[in-house]
Length: 178
Image (cartoon, rainbow, N blue to C red; front, side, top):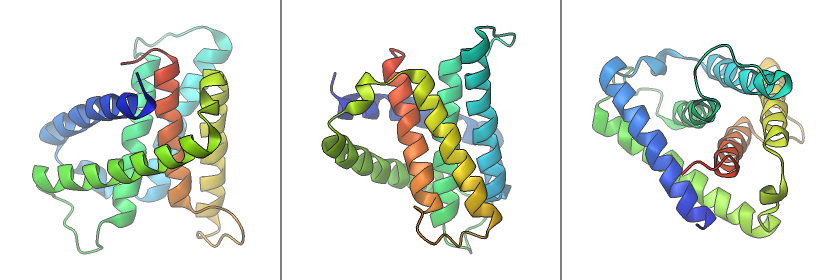
């Protein structure tokens, strides 16, 4: 299966879960400030790394589901970044789906562009290295958030969320997720 096909399949799965949770919980995620979203992604990535390092998993939640959660939290962050300030905390399911799809489509475009330029080098990587890259991006985002986003030469917080999302997609592909 090609990378674009894998991306589409995985994001459809993530979208289905996200919209089901929207049905159950509404748009409670809208209350989260970006640093809170960053911390949620950190919790997921750190759990994955702990399991990778120790080989022990005491909670039944599947590691693949943690990568799915990273994807959806990155999309939450991107939606929060781009939704107009006046957007209600209580969005309709259609408005949520539209915002989700717009961010997922932009991420797909970025993934394909970078995948072309890097020649799918990620296929030769270890999942543990991808986890480390996600954690490194998280530390960068936290630093940028702590200095109010005033980066001198670094990529934006948005770029980091997009990269983490794509790294999580790569990890799922390498782990054999369909």
